[in-house]
Length: 467
Image (cartoon, rainbow, N blue to C red; front, side):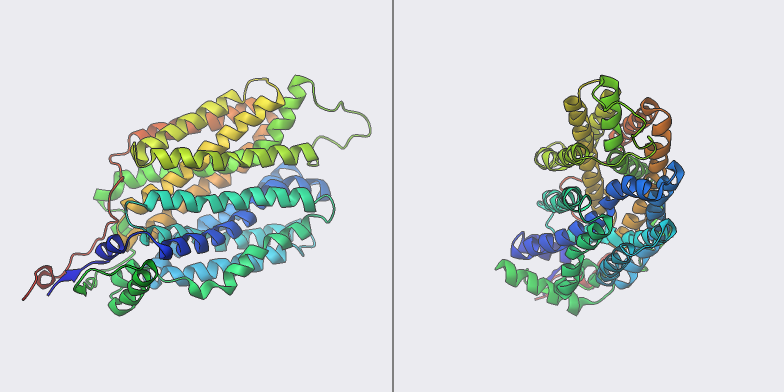
């Protein structure tokens, strides 16, 4: 009698309608997640002016979102490894819609901080989107599928700025938050169509349920499963920190966490500093509006139409890097693609110290955002491919928690240090990108073409065929 594994089945069935459905469904999820997250770029300057907030209050408002993510990233990873990806993702989208919607009715600054913190708590489970996506993809298409899926995140980010440009000046920021909840409502309505991870079912010993999902995949792809019986996984302990921090993973895990932390600080940093950089460069070139006694104090700088347009243009960088990384990731590998992206991020941050025209400044911001977005995409892929099934979600949750440490610190660079010295803030970001570039280059191995790893072994009698 023949036997086959989940990996054999996924590779045999290949890429088809089932994978396209997964990409679009999880992509809609990512769009709603992105829209709620990217509100920080608009709400920070708007609330500063409406409630006359000080720099530290604006930074705290942003930091608390990431604090919620930090505290609950590892618990969500543990829950996902023990009880499945599906229930965690349902909790995420439900909490996202509820807390984001309630923020629109906040009576004061403190309620906004509380509700954004709770929103961060639900966001902590969002990394399971990437875990689930990777587990359904054949190895040949895994990186490309993730980069295509990342388009939806970028659509959410650019859509938020466009929506703010249309809504905030006329209806106000509360309506902006309400409209940003719409994608999440649709995800909730159709959530039952999302399947559970087959690899989770096998790691949990639920062979029948795993086979049902694989049969659905084969039917939609008009393919057939390998002949024989699906091998049941052994009942090894799953999702423990002791397993994750084993010596064989330790070096890669530490370097991976450094990359996640740096990517978090740099990605959200460029989002927060975009409008401030453009305004500062306008002053340095003499194109800024002269100050007068009627001008609002400099601590409050309402976003103008020009600011919104510049921010929208900078978000397009996330789309431009995708075909570049799609080409490189399966030619030179994940490791060198990350290294190249980080080297370019470092270069663009350093170039932003130059006193140039608004067009060049927008281009440099565009480039920095493009390649730090690319870095984040590749580090997601690398982490999901390197760690075995039984600790994959925990590894993603742990690395996500570390990324939130970077994201928590970046508001104090982008919204406090930057007001003291723009050049110093840019040198901090540029130096961080350069350090992460070296860390990526020194990763001990690449994962290009590598099948998703499992930590269990098949029982001896199942490794043979019987007549």
